[in-house]
Image (cartoon, rainbow, N blue to C red; front, side, top):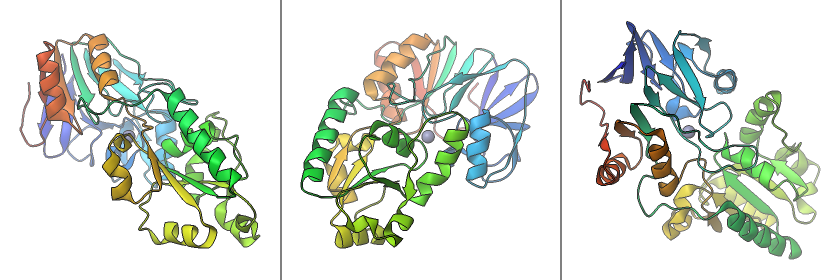
Length: 321
Ligand SMILES: [Zn+2]
């Protein structure tokens, strides 16, 4: 198996003399980087030689990070269903997932388990109390809510992470209109469309506002997830009486809505919930598991109770063997 290393630069694999950084923030220590997807906490901060999907290269560019595409014999990229272009890295019986997607939603499929000896798995929602409701149930609730608000002439702002979640939301709620979008979301739509994802054509909200359209009846606006304290959100509420609906896995907890000062919040996530994570690990049939991100300590403990050799990776612990 490839050697798994940990250093101040992050996790890496030593494979046939090549040191591959796993979603590193910088590349100076590594021969090349593996970039699982284009969320900012997984992207290098500067130009890097990187193994990544075409979609990730394009999305990184949209974020202002130029990655130099690299290839390496013997490595395989595996669809993870988290956002457009997200992939895990399978090399020499080690599978590093990056972030995983959970259940299929809109145009996104779920994460694909891969048989491996060593699994390095994300554990964002790796605690037993993070279990999400079925998508169908959630859609029913949200559509009923929007319907009720529309019947009173109230406009709605649907909020989610601008890369990934916002595009899923647009696809799931495209039947509501007229639809507008925040520019932060629109810049990623272009890349999604380039790779064949069908998304509704939404006008930037500023244009609609300039034409006076936001004063006319209910509408739906797709925006990044922002706190109700944000001045833009406060203005939309004050000027148009808009209601905010946020989407995040953290919304499983009542406190999330209050902390974010959202009118409504629903647990729709681009990550697996706890049960889906456990199922994913089982189906990979690994001999050893390392958990990263989120509830990594709790999740490793749970996996040990299930009989897996599992441990959380804590940065700075040095060589892991
Ligand atoms: Zn992510």
